[in-house]
Each structure stands twice: as C-alpha cells, then as structure tokens.
Image (cartoon, rainbow, N blue to C red; front, top):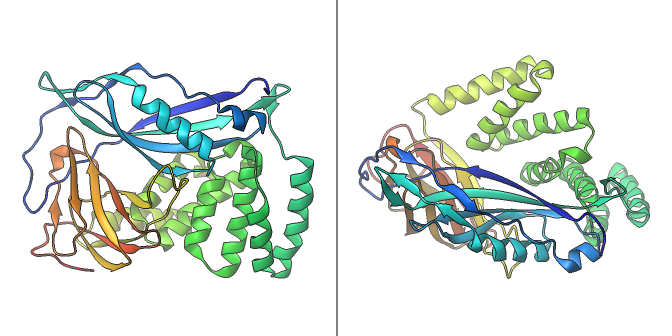
Length: 355
C-alpha cells in the first residue's frame, strides 16, 4: 500500500431550531456537546492503492446519551469509498451530551468535513503525466469555444488526487462562465476552493472574490455573507470599492424589512447508495415559508440546538423560529433537479405567502 496515507478531520458546529405555525418556547443557556471518542476514518484500501484523494462533508446529531444519530452526506468529491467510510465511522463516535440546565439534550446540527489526502516523498500529490496530457488537450477546446467537447472530455477524466480535483473544478468553472451558467460556475468555483493548497495564492484570492460575486448575483444571501466575512479577513487589501459596497449593501438588505428570496435546487452530491438529493442553506431570519417550486419536494428538516424539527414540504404553511434558539440550517429533500424558493421575513408572515 502507498505510504503516509492520512485523513484530515475538521469539525464545526451550527445550531438551528424551528416551530411550525406557532412559536416554540424559549430555551435557556445550552452547553454544547464535547467529544469523548472520535476515531478518524480509515483510508479505504482500494482508494489508497489507486492513490485516490477526495473529501466528504457530513451532518449529524448527538443524542442525549452522547451517541451519534442520522449522519447525512451534504456534499462530497464523489468517491464512493470515502463516503461509505465516513458513514461507517461517524455512528461510532461518542460525546458528552449537550446540557441545558443540567439536563442532557439532543444537539443538532454538527457538521464535519473530512479530507482524504496522501503524501509521496514528503509532499502532496501532483498531477499524473496521463492527466496532464489529457488536460492540455482539453484547454484549446475551451479557448476555441468547443464547450460541449471540452465538457465531454472532462467527464472522461478520472481525477485521483486533490490537485487534479482542483484543476478539473477550475476548468468546469470556465466552461460554465462561457455558457453563462452562473449556478454551475458557482458550484465549480466552490469545489476548486476546497483545495486551497493546490491553487496559487493570488488565484485563490481571485476565486474567493468571484465566489462572493456569484453568490450575490444568484441571491444566495447566507453564503454571500459568509464569503464576504472571509474576504474581509483574508483579502482586505485587494478588495475593490465595488466589492466593499456590495458587502455593505448585502448587510443592509439582510437587516431590512424586505423579504429575502433564496432559490434552491436539489442535487445528489454523493453516490446514489450513500445519500439522497437535497438542498441545504443557512437561515438568516426567524420566519420563513416556501414558494415557486418545480418537481417533487418531499420534506424539510431543521437540525436544532436541543431539538430537531421535520415536516412534509408545504406551500400552505409558514414557520417562526424563536431568537433564543440560535442559528438555523435547513435541509430540503426530494427528487433530484427539483427547485424551490425559500422566503425569509423580517416579521412573521400573516398567512402562507409566496414570493
């Protein structure tokens, strides 16, 4: 087996709550769960022998006894072996449960991103000679406007490491830009930015700025706000006046009384045997409803601080989230390709409005 296989583990906590139709009761101060036993996943043998790299992002809840419940793959680089290993290992983790007033409570959501990466000769893997040859043959097609041919060639490439993953994502971003498909361009830019160590520093900064612009343009308000905060932290010296103005306008819009309408599209971001099509988004306001749907939408779930709430998808209902329940993350499940709009209100909607 190749030497120095490793898995990098990064954890983040996000808290969410909701109520259907009527406000749920306020909560008191909550102490979050603490990890007691959290063994890293194994590097799958088949992936290691093939020098494959990738990543998986999953969400799960922590029960009142400290065990893990209901892991869901939110996104991944598409390597089935990595997804299966993440779903195998997470349910075996153990926590000291979250506590409210001395009483154990369920904590949702906990998000984890696992990077599967390998080393050779003391450094990270680069592009294989065969990949470089095929890659160079595709670039002229993009420049010549043969976007279908370039996209078909990319589909045939099978990236084996994160350097190659980053290069393919950047090529897909260029194809989508030339097609005028901003949603696809945004997805590709995000995929590329998952591998900052494989992107030149200046280019990485440019792509973060592009990600923010695309999120603003596609009305992904929560994501755009997070991206702008990252730009202020890492790219403040190169931000243009227009970018700063866009960030200020974004904050003003979020703080205003005007409804926020965020489009969503359900995608299968993992292997079909390891998860379902979904759309997930961070909530910015306390009241919300849904509108303008296409396709079949089955249910939604809010994973909460001390509680989860799940409901069949409905255009006839509105929900209110108490301030004391903290930030929210919404999951919508249904058929791949189904679309919707999430409408968030500065005040409680009087009925079940649509945007």
